[in-house]
Every structure is written in structure tokens, then in C-alpha cells.
Amino acid sequence: MNYKKDFRDNQGYIARLFVFLLTLYNKFKLMRKIEHIGIAVKSLETSNLLFEKLFGQPPYKQEEVVSEGVKTSFFMNGPNKIELLEATNPDSPIAKFIDKKGEGIHHIAFDVYDIEEEMMRLKNEGFIVLNEVPKKGADNKLVVFLHPKGTNGVLIELCQEIK
Ligand code: ZN
Image (cartoon, rainbow, N blue to C red; front, side, top):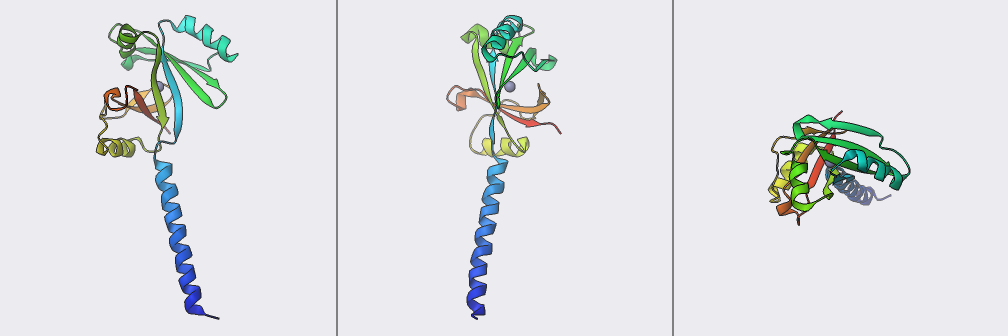
């Protein structure tokens, strides 16, 4: 038996395993998947019926986020989630969005493992964060938005499930 060779081989194996686990861990920490797509609508009542027809099932949840001036409803379509947003006052970001662009896709939300850490990573990459402190959004989430100026005109939401 060549113990020296065995040791060398194992060292290589352990190093590779370590690198693999580290890569996996780092990937796990990044944005993991699209959590939902947010659509700005003028009337939740009307659009709930429309999306119920589209998906063949009603929203599974409706929720008002007073601090954001929005009423939301959530639909599941297979593994995918759609959030409809209606403004509850004229100063709501949704009201401003509809005034400027009309109804339509408002944001894409990505699920993150650690919102603070991901926010720091993206800030270091030069992205503009709209809220420096994660705030409570709909559907039991902490959320941070990235300015669409830095993301090809798409408003990006990072969200982390509140445990
Ligand atoms: Zn959202």
C-alpha cells in the first residue's frame, strides 16, 4: 500500500468536496428563484375576476399593506405566483405607476435567503437600493426594492419569508 499516495488522493478529494460545498452554499445565498410577478391594476375587483378566469381559480389570499398604500391579491398558477396590486390612495407608488405607464407588469420579485446580505452584495455591485432597511411587504415577506434605473427599467423586489 502506498499511504503517501492515499493521503494525497484524499487531500484532493477533501479539497474538492470543500469547494463544492462552498459553491453550493454561496449559490444558496443568492437570489434563488422568481418568487412572484407583481401587476399594477386599476381595480382589484375587476382584475380578480379576470385572473380567476385566466387561471381557473380564485386568488388564495387578499391583503392590504397600509404603509405602501396598496391592496393586493395573490394567485397561484402551478408553481408560479402572481400578485395584483391596486392603489388605495393617489400617493401610492402603484397610483403613480399607473398614471405614468398604465396597468401592467410592475415588478419582478426574487426570493432571497438573507435579504440584508443580498442587499449589501447588490449595493457593492452598484445597484441602487430604494429602501435601506427591509420593510414588511404583503404575504409575510421582508422586502427591498432596487431602482429600475439600474436594472434596465425593471423594478426588482428582493423578498425573504418572515419566519
Ligand atoms: Zn411584490
